[in-house]
Amino acid sequence: MAEMVLEVRGLTVRREGVTAVENVSFALAAESDTALVGPNGAGKSTLVQALLGILPHQSGQVQVLGRPMGPQGQLPASVRAQLAYLPQTFTVRNRCPLSVADFVGLGWDPPGLQLPWHGSERRRQAVRQALAKTGCSDLADQLISELSGGQTKRVLLSFCVVRPRRLLVLDEAQAGLDSQAAEQFYGLLFDLRRSEGWTILQVSHDLEMVRRTCDGVLCLNRSLRCSGPPDHALSPAQLERVYGRGYVPYHHHHR
Amino acid sequence: MNDGVALGELLAQPFMQRALIGGLLTGALGGLLGSFAVLRQLSFFSDALGHSALLGITLGILLGLNPTLVLIPFAVLFALVVSRLVEHSRLPTDALLNIIYSSSLAIAVVALSFVRSYKGGIHQLLFGDILGISWLDLGLIVGLLLTAAAYLGLTRRDQILLTLDEPLAIARGVAVPLHRLLFIVLLAVVVAISIKAVGVLLISAFVVIPACASRLVSRHFDGYVVLAAALGAICAVLGLLLSGRFDLPSGPCVVIFQLVGFLVALAVAAPRNQMNTSSRG
Image (cartoon, rainbow over all chains, first blue to last red; front, top):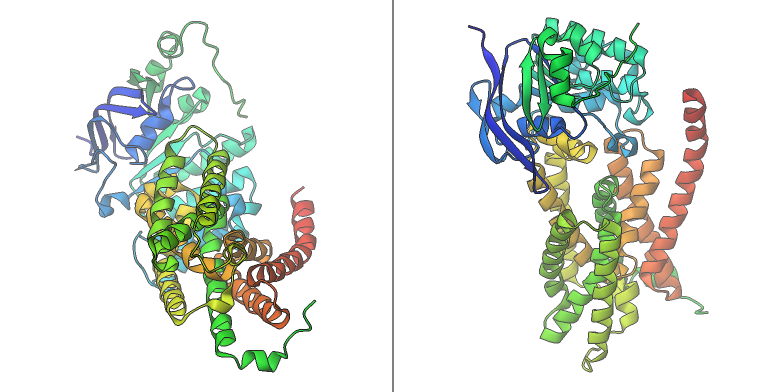
């Protein structure tokens, strides 16, 4: 039986007094690539944020790598270190004078008290390798505020790959990318998933990409409406259950 | 116009020496905290804290206690209540902060007008009187600078990640609520202690202007923080010398030098920004 990296049972999350996610249960097997789809306001980002401990959850259980998460999102540091998150937007970067190499280095360091010069040589080496893996070596000295949308996403992947991880959670990674940049990004993500052995959970509106690249799909509209392999979960009948009648699929027009 | 006092004569005075050391340390402290506060969009928050400090001082005078010692717990409590209010209010943050700081300033000024025994002038409170800085004030500033430098230095990576993107920091395991709380407390104490030197109306300039000037010309985070602290310290010393030489209010003199520093940074950064824009466009 495959190892379960993430197990969710009866999860309910309230946001600003409203139940945004209700009684959701699912599990992700090791090295699987699962898409979380659903209409706007379906609770996808809320679910992802609860799974990462960014939002508290009101009831239900979450287990990451076999360890339970507290209601306020508490996880042991050893488990937390194996999680990576790629946010939908990364807006504050424009005001911060931080180079790409320094930013990626932040993904290498464990949180907590540390002397500023601690582990600097090992960090530099890990950063060099991470940037090489994502094809970002030439961006090392550039400020993160100077990057294009596609470069930013690749640098965020470098941040994830700078240290071995087990679970990667992406919230609409294709947001802000044109079709060519999105295609390159997913190509890179696909390669890294194989080489790094990542288990992936990604929020997406691009059902064509989901159909082509993911092993499993979770269809959310506050509660989980259906799940399974893309052929089953993205059938017209199932999509109507999730998105409602008259649903027109979104196409990204990949080449 | 005052004819002025000879600079050598001025520097020989113990009160001026205390003022210069105090200014140097306060300026560095403002730049250090300001480099994070500006990036976290807390500039207006520090302004509101400064204005409300007058209420704390008034409270100290009414209770017959040392205003500086009353002001520290008052500023911390005030900062915590306000940050909680901002987090939970549906009103825009700037509007809410405006209500808070203008109301507290108004209450404080009205209350002060009833205190007959108050010897200090409202002018000194509003614009600062660093020449009146005591050894107790200096000790507090040194302790605070060491605490702030140690805290921000030892948690440097968590602080940068938190400044960049809070959800990303939480997902990495950074204790975001704790660091947010500690930073607000630190900022409140810095504002409370710097009030004597800078005055209620101009305290936010100490936090904001050196950091903004440094941001314009910096390409490395550590360099940005160090330059902000250095600019804060240098501008404070120059401003105090001007203030002492011509008997002008200390706070405004320092802020004028900060403005000069900011304009120089703007001039230095402009060609570079133009180059970056054209290479990206």
